[in-house]
Length: 353
Ligand SMILES: Nc1nc2c(ncn2[C@@H]2O[C@H](COP(=O)(O)OP(=O)(O)OP(=O)(O)O)[C@@H](O)[C@H]2O)c(=O)[nH]1
Ligand SMILES: [Mg+2]
Image (cartoon, rainbow, N blue to C red; front, side, top):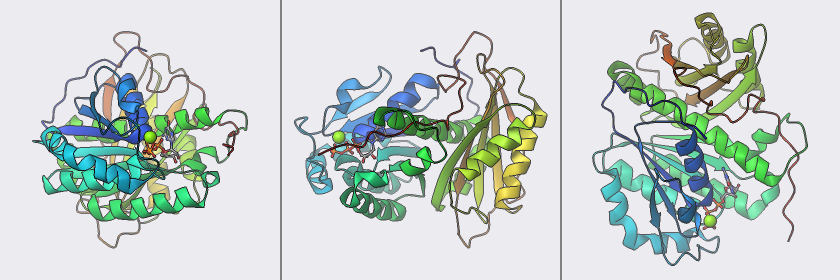
């Protein structure tokens, strides 16, 4: 797959991204293969996932490759002697983004541990995590909830994606693997949106870092649409994909992608719809990207931070200045494989046994 063109980075912010466990490494691969960012990337796993990382991703295999047996405590025990490798990797980072699927051993055990290390280093620490499908069972869901709680107290912001939301409203007709590919795409899109905002300009970078600092509960929603009012319809679809209420969120990072015909008016329409959904007080950071091969479709990814926080945003009236990124100099694929709506999902084959 062809990468997006390397774009000049204005801000000198150092972003490092760490994928943890099987799901974290899989989401990291997705990110590394489809978008170009200045961020260094590291994949960590107690199982075999580090053997399948993209060339541009550093690998930190933990233990003897036999995994954690699904036990977070085993993963933490195995990790102890590797702590210094992670400390070396995050040295000098301004922002560290952690990717993991919660519910089993490695991601649930190590994400909070690594968050503690990155926060101690002084870096803004953001986790982007998948919560398990309900059908994965009570044990995994409880384990994921515990890990999520630990992450809330050890990070600045936890961007949470519920796997069940990925199925909501989707056309039924796919495999479990399709569902996980979808989850990876959503995580990658969210991290892309945040890194773009962080790397765009020094002023915006500082403003986004302020928005995410100690933001607490966060979430990511995405939608896609075509036709008249595609911008606003994609946003509407994004918010309709979850039953959560985001009124009062402290900030939103909004990324709008479209084909070469994407207009500023469509971006503005999408942003107006976001404001309608979350209220006028939130700081909104917008970026947009034109991609060849994207056709008529518009994809919108919205990262909402500080949900339900009493804290007023420091810069609630941040002007909305879309960053126009022309990525159409050579033919490129978008961060999404096909122009098909991302929320068309198939049935999940329930695991047996
Ligand atoms: N995004 C994504 N999520 C996945 C994938 N596979 C599994 N998951 C989800 O992530 C959760 C954790 O699974 P893994 O990442 O495989 O587990 P792990 O963290 O490696 O833990 P152990 O293998 O038990 O050490 C699961 O409960 C699923 O909900 C994947 O390929 N992509
Ligand atoms: Mg694993």
